[in-house]
Length: 164
Picture 1 (cartoon, rainbow, N blue to C red):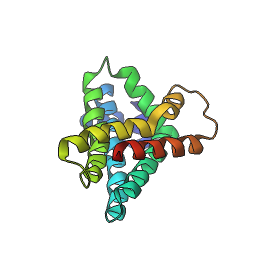
Picture 2 (picture 1 turned 30 degrees about the vertical axis):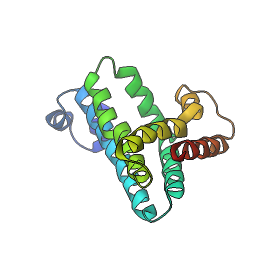
Picture 3 (picture 1 turned 45 degrees about the horizontal axis):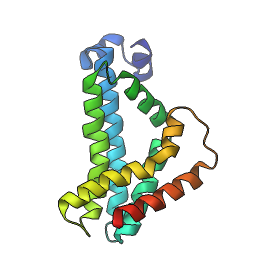
């Protein structure tokens, strides 16, 4: 809390007025970072809204991959996974404001071709295929050679699978 207060340029008591505990601060951080990702994805989707579903999904895949492999986001993801059992609210906030929202963006694109339930199912599959093994490897600290090439292949496969 001392480090957070110093970084924010406020006293520790000010931090505690906004966040009652370290855990609440962490949940707030996760919520804020998920909102930031949602904003980036919404902006990217607005720019692509007139494209073909193939192009829109490919763009969504790239934006998602680039955000989530950034060092800060990888560290945050690792911390969420490590603490989710102890802090169920943390996992819920991440799921509701992060993972679920990303799938909603993909489902919106897929509704151009499929009914709502099919679009939702394919959106979930799309997101998992975009991240694939490369994200798992990065998440556990494994070096991924040619990471962009790996994600390019995963994104191509994810788009093809989603639109089959």
